[in-house]
Every structure is written in C-alpha cells, then in structure tokens.
Length: 246
Ligand SMILES: CCCCCCCCCCC/C=C/C(=O)SCCNC(=O)CCNC(=O)[C@H](O)C(C)(C)COP(=O)(O)OP(=O)(O)OC[C@H]1O[C@@H](n2cnc3c(N)ncnc32)[C@H](O)[C@@H]1OP(=O)(O)O
Ligand SMILES: NC(=O)C1=CN([C@@H]2O[C@H](COP(=O)(O)OP(=O)(O)OC[C@H]3O[C@@H](n4cnc5c(N)ncnc54)[C@H](OP(=O)(O)O)[C@@H]3O)[C@@H](O)[C@H]2O)C=CC1
Image (cartoon, rainbow, N blue to C red):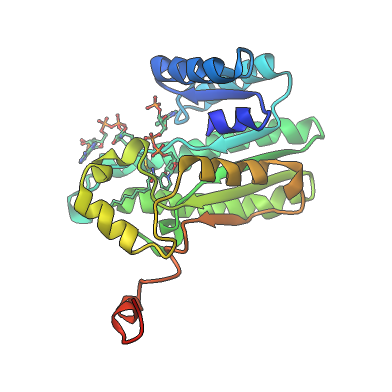
C-alpha cells in the first residue's frame, strides 16, 4: 500500500513494530522511485504514548501529516469456545484499540490546528457479516466499522474525514496460512463473482481515492473491494446449479 501511494506521488511514513521489515519496505520504494518518498518509524499501536511519538516523528519527516491508514491487524483461526480472554484481548487491542489510539491522537491534532485530514480504516466484509473461526478479529473489525461511521459523522463538519476500505481476501501478509492450500484457494475463487483474487494494489488505489481531494464529500463510508463476494453465492449458491447456468 505504501509503495502504491508513493507511485501516485505521496510521501509516506510506514509504521509497525519491526524495524527490519519497515526498512525493507523503504529500501524497495527507494529502489523503484528514488529516496525521500518513504520513511520508516516504529510504533506499537496498542500504546498511546508510542502512537503520539510516532506522529511527532511523522510530522518532522513529512512537514504535515494529511492522512492516516489504520492497517495494523492480528489474527489466528480458532474455535470461539477455545479462545482465552488473553487471546481475544491480544487481537482487539491491536485492531480496535490501535485504530482508536491512532485516529484519536491525530484527529485531536488536526482539530486543534483547525485543519482537515483524512483517515482510512482497513476493514473486511466480515466486519458486518461476521466470520466463524475468527470471532476476535471479526468483533474488532465490527467495532472499527462503528467507529468509522461515528467519527465520519462527528468530524465531517470540521474537515476531518473518516472512511474505510473493506478488501476481500488477498494472498499477502497475515493470510499465508490460507494461500498455501490450493484447494482452499480454488474454493475461494469459485465463490467470488469476479472470478479472481484481489490484488493488493487495488486495495491501495481504493484507499488512495478516499484519502484524496476527489473524496472530499465522502464521510463515514465503507468502500468494499471484493469482486462482489459478499453479495453473491452465499444464500443463493445453488443458483449456479440451475439449468441454463454455467
Ligand atoms: C477457520 C476459519 C478461518 C477463517 C479465516 C479467514 C481469514 C480471512 C482473512 C482475511 C482478512 C484478514 C485479516 C487480517 O487481519 S490479516 C492480519 C493477520 N496478521 C497477523 O496475524 C499477524 C501475526 N499474528 C500475531 O501477531 C498474533 O497472532 C497475535 C495477534 C496474537 C498477536 O500476538 P501477541 O504477541 O500479542 O500474542 P501472545 O503470543 O502474547 O499471546 C496473547 C494471547 O493470545 C493467545 N494466542 C496467540 N496466538 C494464538 C494461537 N495461534 N492460538 C490460540 N491462542 C493464541 C495466547 O495464548 C495468549 O493468550 P493467554 O494470555 O490467554 O495465554
Ligand atoms: N490479507 C487479506 O486477505 C486481508 C487483509 N485485510 C486487512 O488488511 C490489513 C493488512 O493485512 P495483511 O497485510 O494481510 O496483514 P499483515 O499481518 O501482513 O500486516 C499486519 C501489519 O500490522 C502490523 N502490526 C501488528 N501489530 C501491530 C502493533 N501492535 N503495532 C503496530 N503495528 C502492528 C504488523 O507489523 P509488526 O508485526 O512488525 O508490528 C504488520 O505490518 C489488516 O488490517 C487486515 O485485517 C482485510 C481483508 C483481507
């Protein structure tokens, strides 16, 4: 996502807890586009003080911060009845609390300065459908959906826009446990009306739109990018079996 934003002309601070992976991302962007577009800053989004320090550093590096993408997440598949209180907390603290810490800290700064800004939260369609097997992450994403709509309305009149993207499954990052299984991959693709998986750049482009001045009248909205997956082939999956189909 950071690389695509830079290709579109932005300057970006990439954040996370692991210095090495951030440096690697910046090196890749430097290699493609030249130095000075991307910078690495470590942060733990669960810790409000770490978030404030990251935003101070981002302002030093960029001059001004115009946008925020809340992308950090954590997830492990588990039956709900086996999930411990600590396991539930571990995911909710990253996804829901982390999104709040980053959004509230930067939102306060923008409002105090009397200027606007744009926040994009990264959801998934199961924020509203639910997802058996990952109750911790689905609950946290559902909370972020409510936060998106609430702050989208609460701050829109003061120029701070809060929106979200909801990508379908991308064979990147934290979902490697699914990508490796060809049978799961085939079944997923079969269930997607668009007939293919999502590319990470497509999510980045949707987020870039919501961050941009082309979206100045968009507030509290969720842009779903899932090839129609959440709309079709659920309740009516049998339709493909009817005569005249396929
Ligand atoms: C079966 C159906 C599956 C459907 C799957 C559909 C998937 C579609 C996905 C599409 C959407 C993608 C959304 C994403 O968010 S992708 C991002 C995923 N990224 C990651 O997962 C990053 C790597 N993961 C982690 O960092 C960790 O999993 C974690 C989130 C837990 C954070 O680790 P932390 O260091 O905070 O955790 P601890 O090791 O200290 O443990 C804290 C408690 O959590 C319990 N725990 C941890 N891992 C597991 C596990 N694998 N199984 C069970 N419990 C776990 C641990 O025991 C601790 O609990 P206690 O304090 O009670 O002991
Ligand atoms: N992959 C997919 O199919 C889909 C993903 N999504 C969403 O897209 C986003 C990215 O997913 P994906 O790239 O797969 O996941 P990854 O696991 O690859 O990325 C998660 C990122 O979050 C960072 N992170 C985790 N915990 C913290 C923390 N406490 N503080 C700061 N950073 C943290 C990780 O860095 P580090 O560990 O170094 O801190 C890592 O860079 C997530 O919000 C996910 O829910 C939505 C739909 C589908």
